[in-house]
Image (cartoon, rainbow, N blue to C red; front, side, top):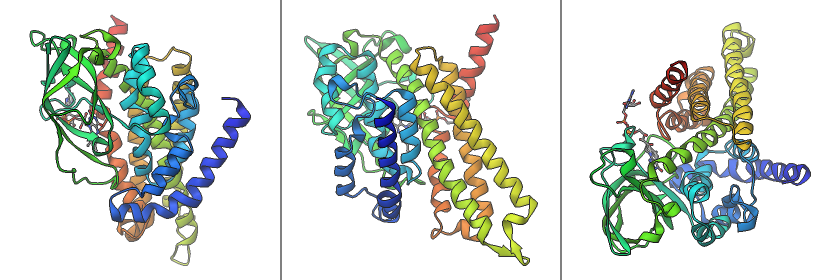
Length: 381
Ligand SMILES: Cc1cc2nc3c(=O)[nH]c(=O)nc-3n(C[C@H](O)[C@H](O)[C@H](O)COP(=O)(O)OP(=O)(O)OC[C@H]3O[C@@H](n4cnc5c(N)ncnc54)[C@H](O)[C@@H]3O)c2cc1C
């Protein structure tokens, strides 16, 4: 997108966040849902199609551009981002990265308009960090695969039109090479949803189990058309997703710092602003260091992604740093607010709960650490 148009888009989104989304945050928290008119506005603004190439009707943004918009969007409650997050990211990227031309032609235009919502279904009750051990089975019967299994904590499952779902097509291979990625329409007979998960935070963002009982999926729905590639596809999707999550962390950091700074400059104790106490200043300064290091690392990693140069290790370094950094920022934000920071009336309380998820999904911090360290050792040997 040319610089001027992109600048206008950023300004438009920033205004929308300020004037429309931030005032709607409390209602979303209370209703545990996003109002339909906001969903419609997201569609009208093209937000579902950020990452879809222009030839398929999307905005065709680069990762650098997507990161900037996601940062702006997540100044408002991160729940709003979750609405588009799986369609822009992990739910659709398998098709975008590894899909056949026919698969792209069928799905990408629908993702671009928000007509179809995509979810990513990898995790299972027995397979979280060790995703390669997943047990959901896909057995070929002629032109179809019969899929059986349960997927857990699937974001946007209640809203999904389609799942990109990883299942084991080779029962003889218990590892990654036995896994294929499928495009599974959510209305396929045999699919049912568990009851909505009750979560610590991110109210309004929906997750639940997806249960598959004898779901027949055409063999043509294997992403890329080749069985056994599904785990690799999922890992490519997650590498990109980790850059997206860092942008989420940064948007949340912006808001947390904004709120903390305002509070520190307004709240009086011992006859002065609490921001005049050096111990409070230390917290503010540490927050800023965490924010700027995240921003710099995000800009670099997204640019390297766009240049086709990024490695899985760099994506993990970024995700680890960004999610841990915003966790520290949220913790300090609550501290700066004192007792008020513990009260639901102040938004830092909600951000503190919402931000906790970033260190867990799309690979826990420990999994990022193992990816980074293993890669360092491989390089050395
Ligand atoms: C709100 C929410 C939304 C989600 N959305 C989706 C989604 O849309 N699609 C999807 O597929 N999944 C989704 N997930 C699943 C998420 O990705 C997993 O929860 C996550 O990967 C961790 O898996 P687990 O919960 O099974 O934890 P476990 O893997 O059981 O981990 C438990 C603990 O053990 C540690 N651990 C595990 N293995 C190692 C190791 N080798 N070395 C060191 N420590 C280790 C972990 O770091 C963690 O601290 C979502 C989860 C949540 C909570």
